[in-house]
Image 1 (tube, rainbow, N blue to C red):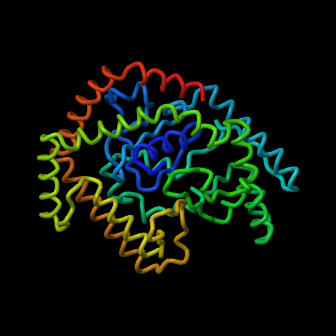
Image 2 (image 1 turned 180 degrees about the vertical axis):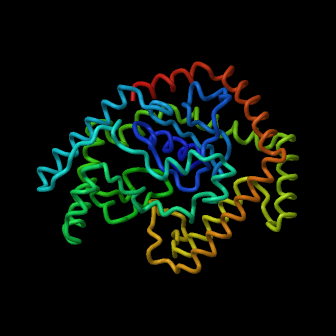
Image 3 (image 1 turned 45 degrees about the vertical axis):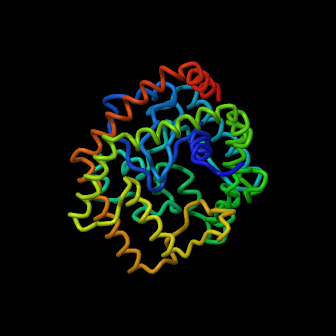
Length: 349
């Protein structure tokens, strides 16, 4: 099976099932005063707006606030993590999810889109996703870790987070086959605990494979929205607006974000194989990046994002949303049975 936007959308659903997410480069959520016609079936985080050239299906467990069932599962993860760490010779205190403070990432992505753009651009080069979201002094584990030597901290992080504890990245083949993917064999106590409670990621991929046709239809829906004449004209006006603001050469709404990502890849030295068989995913650290060049990229990103947001607000967003909702409503009417099956399957995850 070749990698497709539909497959990536499926992965997005599964990656977000049962836990929150920090999505590098994803736009902050606007206040949900009116819901997408598909939100009832795909989840509150669903967005059919193109991000990086694909439909972003972000189904967050329990919606904005976790249900009691979800909180109970998160408590089990904490308890299992504590038991695993104890067996590994480390102290770890299970902290109930309701006592955990929100991270700075939550604060950032709760900002209105225009304010987010002013401070973080797209959140691509401006936020180091490999770094902890901020140390919570009220969390007893922060104090425990801070009391360790540098060597002991590395061992602690390795035990807690496994192979990802030191910032390693995972190479996923472009054919989308998990068996060929270079995945960490050591998930750490946190990863093992999550699998115990929520199940293995591959099992979830397999269980949702029956919805592949639904995601293909969603991709076709995205294309119908993009090619609608009203959206085409609004996109052209947006492109002209960006050019007038000093940012010429962008033809599609997700092009500016892609441009920033490409510049960051160049700065980081990230290279994909020429044959396209694998891509590297995972948050790299900016520690070894030229600080001056990174500062220049961040300035470029923020200026571009501000102009992009301003130009989209002049008509593109309203037009695209109107067309999306119109076509989504038709889509729901035509595919209601399968959408209900998907919704029910997600509720049972």
